[in-house]
Figure 1 (cartoon, rainbow, N blue to C red):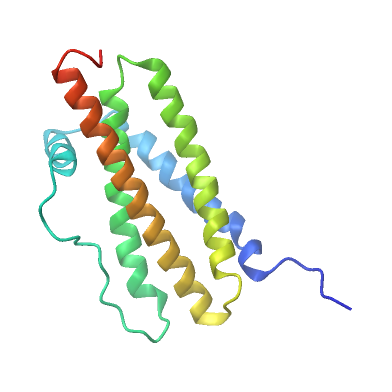
Figure 2: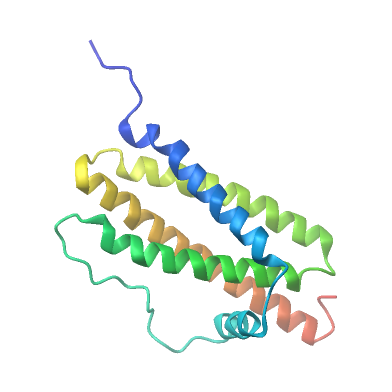
Length: 163
């Protein structure tokens, strides 16, 4: 007879979702307090990139997820900064802004479900390592999507088209 309980990775999904919710709440909490430094960081992040990716982990291959977690946190902070800046950039386009909010919520659900599936086969420390690896890959990918969107929107606005 098959064991019909949920795989361990799926049971951890509420914890992953809670973590994502905390990130969203912290983004909302600091969104109104953008400093000059944060604006500068945002402008630097959406600028054309000619440097190597600084979020390529050089972690030991022993399956330890703590090393990867450091890079996931950095990628998440970068993603949050891009998201906050883009939300401010879209203040004059409420429909696009709302679509981005909905897209981000759906992306978080996709990310969590996808990482649960990608890591379902693994157990123990390797399971956690695979989750962190997946989170890093998808967070970097999403940050790049938002960066490109922000640059396109800014270029259109500069040309008088995106207003």
